[in-house]
Amino acid sequence: SIAIDTFPKLDTMKISLLLYLLAVPCTALPDHHRQAFFSPRIKGVLSVSGGGDPVLLSNTRPLTITGADLYKTNVEVGVYKATGTFKKIFALGIVSGFYIGFGAYLAVTVGLNCPGLEASNPGLHKMVVGAFGLPMGLIFVLITGAQLFTGNTMVCMAALMEGRIDISALIKNWVASYSGNFIGAIILASLAHKTGTLAGYPGAAAIATKKC
Image (cartoon, rainbow, N blue to C red; front, side, top):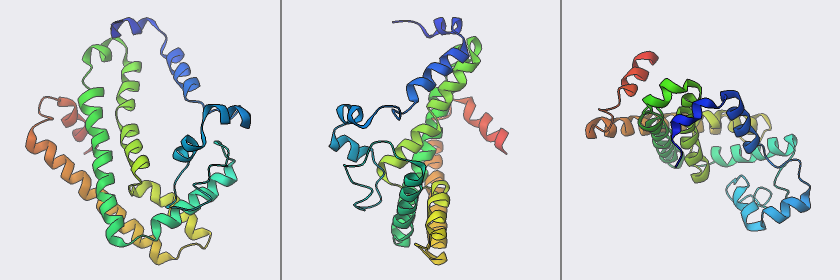
């Protein structure tokens, strides 16, 4: 295996560009090429679910969509998220708080636990911290359909502006998801404190001190 210390010889900008190119979606591919790479079942999994809406779960849609279609999809997701019961939104909000908190936990225990990489290549170290932080929590939220307040402020507001929900549904979703996120994050932080799993990671205290 190649030691991570060999990476400082590479230019950080080149590494960033390479990662960006790898992350670019296949929007330039024609539809018949997309069909070859993605089966209908995979396309259905990758599409954004709005709770059973036939438009959102259709396997006949191309993998990539226009901005207007993306906005319509967000509106449908907002309707689905805002029309749930307060209890359901609150419970999924707690789960989402756990996930985002766990992303921060990974950032501290993995990303910030690379002193050698930080000294030799600070740019790459910041990329590692970012990769093991919020993205992991967001992936958990997206694939499980949990209720995250920050995302709900966009999709639910879009649904309200399109007249698909009323102001009471918007307020219900925001209050339930925000309070659930807060409680979920507090519970995870309490568990980490009680078990002492962050005791050997001074980065956690440094981040908390800087934020305060």
